[in-house]
Image (cartoon, rainbow, N blue to C red; front, side, top):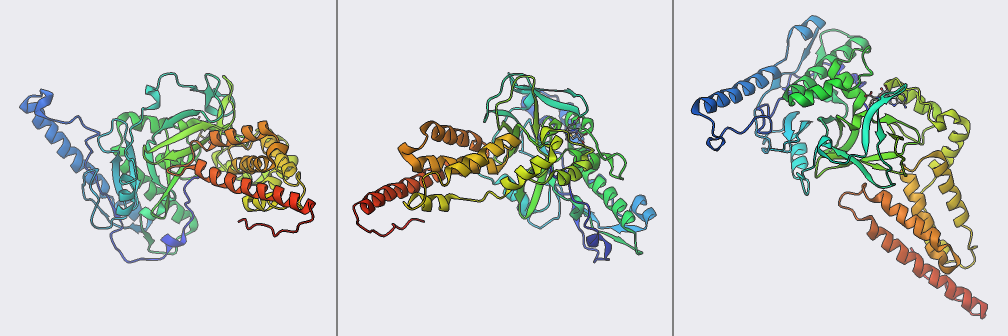
Length: 475
Ligand SMILES: C[S@@+](CC[C@H](N)C(=O)[O-])C[C@H]1O[C@@H](n2cnc3c(N)ncnc32)[C@H](O)[C@@H]1O
């Protein structure tokens, strides 16, 4: 989970040209927020008229709420903010100019919408033109036989717990964010001070302006979603963040990159998952359905807490604790209780690199021992499992290497080991690739390894007969 960066003070300190900076596009309520008013609904002309007036009123209100430049707050604090330009657009329209901010409710017409704050017209285009978009999904609350519940976890607030056994690779949940916004929100408003402001003053101004940008998005949400947002945990009550910003900073997950910006999202249920440095679940964002998928990275037993990671799992203990402190977390998961040993293991694991070319070379070289690679490969796998790092890409990479080495060893190797590695690798890769087919890559590498190892056997046999042959070319 990556909270927004708010530290780019140099960008707001210097006076700038007073160009309109924040544009409140698409402020008209989308059709997802109002019942469509048509004759077919059986409503009377008076009801239809009232509905039309309601839409006009909400549009006007939204636009007015966006005109928050030069108000009492900023004047009283001695700074000015850039003007916000409001241009109502339909959710499917792409603006032809290039505004700095677009408020839009997506997918258009969905009963399960996401309030989106986008930084450019190009971002909106990329969002709505993504292949397969918009793929509908069910709200978590509508999914029968959910495998989890949200309950109180001693010492952690609320958390997610398995209500049945879950197998490695199983999908636990998929959920759309309540709010989607760029990582680091300070770019949305230009602030300039009339005097040499202190860092604290600049931070206070930035927090206040970001809060107001968020307020526009929040006011566009459906009442249920607003209530869900406000119920989320806020770990930033005392640092000057407003309530919307505090909740955002506590609960956002990084989602995806779009037009050079990282996008983040706050979720009703998925934001209830607590952190662990040996998590049993991982998440990926599915662009076509605009939803986050949570899946098990190892078997989870009924009653076990479902956890994910908020930080870099291979960072040393001290760095992880420092990072987690911003959430008010003092992590006491197993690796954090044995930091010296765990740091050493994680340091070794972090050195793991792509070894596929080396494996192919070894497979083709009779002079190299059969067990040269399998021993270190299994050692790394054991270390990863011992540290509970199945959620890292190092784990899938180590599984992949081991699978290739077993394949090269052929009958000399371990068939069960080979099958276990390839099946586990495929289970874990199931949710992480969008549009890419990991099986294709595996097929290609397996073929190379098998060709190389056949060549090696041939070489070994000919050398045994006293014939010297060149090593075949392998990548
Ligand atoms: C994104 S929220 C997770 C859900 C939260 N527990 C709740 O009640 O809504 C992050 C907050 O959960 C708590 N938390 C998460 N992981 C924790 C952990 N490993 N130990 C203690 N508290 C944790 C912290 O208060 C943190 O600020």
